[in-house]
Structures are given as C-alpha cells and as structure tokens.
Length: 577
Image (cartoon, rainbow, N blue to C red):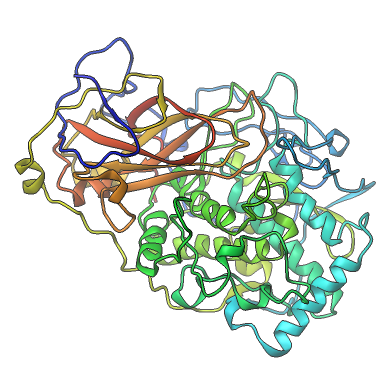
C-alpha cells in the first residue's frame, strides 16, 4: 500500500504502522549492532575554556583551525560524524569578502567590514566587573536610559567605523548571505546557520556588541538585556522597544504583533494573527531544550569543509527561527528587518532575542545535563570581531564555552517551562483500538505539498536502557528547498486524528522544521532535519514497534519542499557524557 498524501483540508485519519515492505530504494542506512565509529569520535564530553592553560593563545599554524569572522576565514577541517571522511581545509582571508548573495528585491548593500592591518589573539580581560543581563521587560529607569543612550551613540558613529550600528548589523549579513568566498572545490560559502557554528558565533557576536555599547557610555558594567520570551511575563515584545522616539525602535516589525500580543513560538501564518498561548509556548521550549540530549540535535551538524553540502540546524536554532519570522515586517517582500537574516541586525531587538537564545544554551547545560561538543574542529573554530577599541581580534569557540570567563551572567528567572513536558494524546491501547491502516515507506523523493503519512523502518527496538543512553535514536530527513524562502513543516509520530489539530502540547508532536530567509545559493539547497526520538517512543509506549509512523504537515512555504530521504539513525545524535 502506498504512502498516504492528503490535501491541507484533511480532516482525520486512522492509521497504524506495519513492517515496511521491500522497495527499490534504501529507507535506512545499514548499521551493525555495535558502534561503527571509534570512541574518540563518538564521545562528546564537557569541556571548559581551559585548554591546557593556553586559553589566550591561538596557534597560527594549525591547519585545522576555522577562521571565521569579520574579515576572513582561515584554514578549516570539519567533523561530520564519519571519522573516515577526509577533511578539506578551507583557506581564505579578509580580502575574500564580497557582495552578499541577497534574495530578489533586496536593496544591494555592502556587508564586508573595514580592512585591518593587524589581527590580535583574544586575551581574557583581567579584573573585569561582572555584567548581569536582565530580562528586557524588567529594564527601567537608569538602566534603560543607559541602554538607549548607548544605542544612540552607536547609531551616530560613521558607517565606516567598525563599532557603528551599520557595521554591527552587517556582521550578520556577511555570514548568512555568502559574502565570504571559499575555495571553488568546496561548498559554496561560509555559514553560521544550519550547523554547529550557530551557538558560539552568536555568543561572541553579542560579547563584542555588548562591550562596544558599554565603552560608548563609559560603563564597563553595562549588560545587554534579554528578551525573556520563554516566560509568561516576557512573551510580548518588550515595551522598551516600542517607543517610536527611542533609539531602540525599529519600524520594520509586524504591526499585528505589538504588545499585548504574545509571541507564538509555533507560528503557522494561518488566518488572522492571534496572540500566542503561554502553555503552548512552554511546551515548545521544553521540546527544543529540555527534551534534547544529543549535541548534534541541539547545536546542529558540523560545518562541512568539503565533500558536498549536508547541514542541519539544531533545536536551539530551530526554536529561535520562529521568533525572527514572527517579529519581521510581513508587508516587506523579504520580511525585513527581523524576518530576514541579512537585515535582522538592524533591529535592536535582534540582539536581545539572541541574548535569550544564548541564555537557553546555558540553561540546557546547567539544568538539563547538556554537554558541549568536544571535537577539535569545533573547539578550534575561530572568528574575527572588532572590539570596543576598533582592534580586530581572533577568538576561538572553546574560549566562549564558559560564559563566566567572558565576564557576564544571566539574572535568575524562574524556568516556568521546566515541567511542561508534553503529554500523549493517545496511549498504546487507544491506538490499537483504532482501525489500523498499514503504511508503506515513502515514495522518494517526495514533494511535500500536502499532509503526508508514511512508515519509517527501525533497525532496533526495545533497546536496553544502557543502549539508549549510549545511542540516541533519531528521525532524519534530507530536505531540499529554496533557502531564500521561509518554510515550516511539522513532524508528527503515531498521531491519530486530524494532523492540523496537533500542537506542541501533544507528545506526538515531534518537532518543526523552520527556515528563515537567507542566502539563496542554488548549490546549497539540501539540509538535514534531525529529531531525537528515544524518550518520545518510550512515552508513547511505542519502543516495541517495527516502524515509526510519520506524518508531515506543511504549514507555509512559497515553493515546494522535497523530502529526498527519510530514515532512522542511531548515530546522528549519539553522545556520551
């Protein structure tokens, strides 16, 4: 029996999963029962910024270093979860920066930073005062006055000053829209989205942005607020950003999403915009943070230096994407400012949004047992940023893993979503009572222009607790689409009923694939979407099933999305503490 494809007017279905029938394509990669990879590449362990006492020095001769930042990209080799793959070093410099690859209709802009004659290695400041980042909705009085004055002074700087508001906004443009060229034999361009560079790049980005603002008002204790959209009191756009007379205001925001409208972290762009739901937002954050164990599922895939394009956004980035789209101006063809990566840095709320994303990285580690990546290609990846003294500084990812060494912390705020674990809509007995409709594997490639259900074969089932701890089972989709277009589709597993009624509050709601418009490079159209499902299958009493019943629900996207492959993996998210 073929896979089921139904139009968006779909009302309900009752289907069950049976063993997948044979087909001409490979539905899942062959995997022996024991680990395929050496432990040195499988294990992910906690690391600090202390690298043998050599935190402040970067070896300039290390060919494995990734030099990414304002001004250049140095030699790089990337870890791909396959230790037998040969890494191709990436070689470029600040002279390689050119015009960004922008979507149709966007005004041409130069995103490259000013050239520098000297580059210094980052040294942790000594005796620096602690900077405490507070929720934006709690910033008032003198703190607000300082923040507005700092942004006003940054806006007043000449555009060619690397500390200026224009240059700071262009950092994001350059690294999301193909300004930096790579060797012609390698993937198209450097990117800090859909891979493991997302978290460290943006942490460093905020660090220097914050330091520049503090220096402009001569206050080394100045701390960037965070948009606390994971707390009921902070889910609307903070009031400090809504005053049209303020330096914090940006005109290119969604007029329908102003306070007291709450952000919808599961925004589907359907019908008249309504306020988000607190409980649904909590469930979404829980799913993307507390529910994620494997680093690849949290941070994203490795940055591929060669051998074709295969990237994947982590759950942290996916969660952050919806806020971008929700905030941007829908009357603009490309959703400027927050709704497109080349323009998002022009809105001051961008930095407070990312401050909360950075905070959630810390929470994932400190509260939910998350572990940082320990692969050398990740740790040695490096970026260039201009500091508050207009010096071009080289930093490494490993130097930012311990935020206390960077001199800032987040104000303690109750984590109201920590117990918001979604509950199953049905249990095993209820599913068995429904009339089963066996599903076949998908007919790949599959153009996702309607709700589609199919079976994905599992290799192992009813694994021991130790095996589950060692190897996270995950659903993997190879997705092809135009990256210049906003796209969202949801993934449901073992869902009974109307897929359009499923929400993040349902355990069967496995996750959402969300893309925000960025570089529309024709050679870089395929990415992976990886969802850890070990605990999910246990909660649904489905760990003894031969297949995973999958339903894909397209939500928005101007162009078709193609699923080139769908399979279960035991290595994409695997890690060991």
